[in-house]
Length: 251
Length: 251
DNA sequence: AGACGTCACTTGTCCTTACGAGTGATGACT
DNA sequence: AGTCATCACTCGTAAGGACAAGTGACGTCT
Image 1: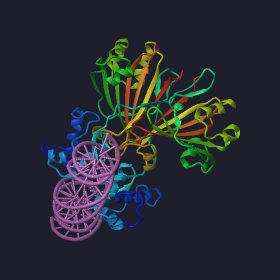
Image 2: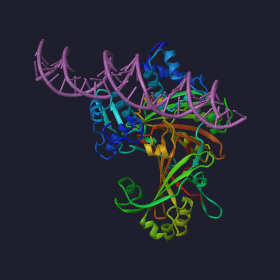
Image 3: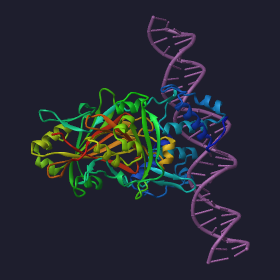
């Protein structure tokens, strides 16, 4: 390393130098970094050290690396999709879920039967091992190409009360809400938002770049008697999406 | 590698083998993995390959490594703190922000003067380079030790209308809302939630483990005339926290 | 002109070797 | 008994070499 070494490990010094250069605008977003050979030459370090430094920047999400081409400054430009989790109703009385409503199914929905786990039972207010309808969908935003995994879990108690639902567990959320309202439910929702690193299969199906977390949203839909009717789980790459909420103070 | 090699790189095969063992419950959460030397022996690979495999599992957040001790299966047990972003009002008319309200300041708040950037100007409905009050706080949940960074940005226009606010820009959010309500505002909030990997300084101040994203919440508080009054930005490690929202359909 | 093979460049993988540094237990010395 | 040095174990860092694999351009052959 040619510079004054402050923090500690060599590769961290190299990483810090490159990071500062990026944040200082020395390399434009999308522009290529020097090749590994050039970085070895510039900082007088071995290739493993250079690779270690670049790996650190990769883990921070600052740099994208393409095999055979080079390393490039990630062009952030913020989330491409704003998913509004605010739920409105059209004048005709139909529900509108802003954002996700316009998405398209990337492949055939997969419906199946399963049962509650410890986590899902708690959210739905049921015992464990109770039977559920399940439906997994892969959604795509045609404009941006952003992908999302949507899982809908419906207790048998709900489908018994709403016969249409048992026939169409793969219906769009808005349609499901309409069915529930048709039988007299006054709906409200409870959402919890988490973020974590994707598992390998999520990385591939959502087509996630390096170092991009997934937003994991669990929405429990409740009816008039405050009983949980449906559980929806949405997973989406956080690099491309943001969730928006509108909140009014209780009066 | 002793097993049949399917995917590709050796280290990925090793990583996959360990990952499956973890997910199959072969190693309990919190239990130590075999040491690097033992993994070299078991899979007949070199140390760099073993380290590469473990690094992959680290990046997935499956494994925690402690220098001098060993590698351990991360004990997830879900988020420790549920931060309710639902805003209620006490019978006396004071605001309550569930969750964050009980947090304590970990160090002295830092107040300063700054100006709007391209991003903040858009959220606040202002031009760029307009003057702002800023206040950065580091909050700690005494129960769980979870840490959060809270930044409050207040346009001069807001402090002029609410004289108390100019004197106490480091006030707690609930107190600020009370001040705004006292001058006749009917408040509502617009929040956007994103997740990304932390920058190095965020990693240290929030004391984040490996491979944990940060949840980044931007809350714009608006008054009676739907004009933006305040921008609050909350950053918190996603491994320990989840955000919860209650949503009612428009009627 | 077009198709295709080659070549130079890039990053990816894997090995060997060596030493530094944190941790905890063991055991000797005071 | 208590204190502290030592040691064996862990992971961390760094260097060197070698070859595989993806990419794009250049040049040749048809």
